[in-house]
Length: 219
Image (cartoon, rainbow, N blue to C red):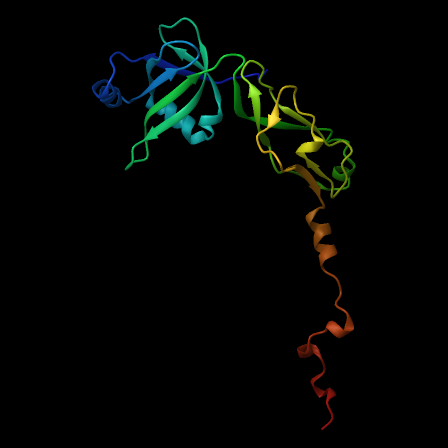
């Protein structure tokens, strides 16, 4: 289970319709609706500054939240299904949140943790570990979200590559990208070594004509 599911705070929105929504925006709130999960839809308001900060951080629509609604005792897990924006200012004006049951299947980005870096032969030789995908989008069950994906690099040499097929994924999860064995990480040679290998002496017949002796021709 993921260690920290971020909280999203909201208040119940009194009244429905365009009038109530406009009033919420005048008060620097973003109106929204929470639906699904076998319960009635719940109109809410979220502070504009909090929502804007989360949107700016990225991947808002693929992040699982623990929704805390003031005055409602039970928290609920939700995922955003839509954020409406002003067509001129491109600022959020409404959002739809969907309640999730523990058995619901959703798409989430799960962080990758690399272990064994201290003993990896390639890294001991000066190689550089490049995390091509520091997080991977997986289809997971809402009630059993893995905290991370663990990738062991302890036996990697310079030039080795780890693909998603090389990684043991948490039980009950699968990659969203199918049909392609994408790269998770690799160990590349140090920049100095790459430069040395790339700078070979040209063969005699490869010396540019401009570098040859101009007096070589007979008069």
